[in-house]
Image (cartoon, rainbow, N blue to C red; front, side, top):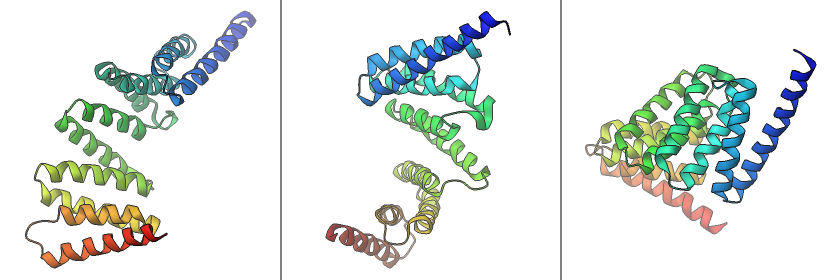
Length: 220
């Protein structure tokens, strides 16, 4: 690379990092319009340095979508999120934020748009991705199982929701121990959406365990 090009690339890189910091500070302070503007400028600089499909763009696109979502501009937030996901899928492990977090953001946007069927499809896609991982984070996976279970349970698909809650419960007990508040949440959801043909005593036992945990936490 010619020296003049190297210097210009270095200078643009400095500007890019400054814009990312500016966007992060604005997001943290809930100055969402300011964050959006900084993200847009950062994306333009990154495209000039790295190209429009480089994994480096996933970060500012994620932040841009967050700023747009906070302002209620759901269609724009969805478009930014979808672009970040497409880049991350092509980039693989080098994407930052990683693909599961990008998909989680898209799910939040779809939920705000009231697109329950698309949210369910996305949760299933995310679950399939976790199931392909050698060592997924148990709490992230349990949170996804819980959300998919709630979605299915609320539409009456208890038979499909129940094993998801049981799996979430086992993951949380293994990661956090039997007396953690997140275990109580899993017990409550598992009991609430237990299949109708299961014994009433089973539901009562799970609710009793959940109540014991809640009482322990309240006494601390």
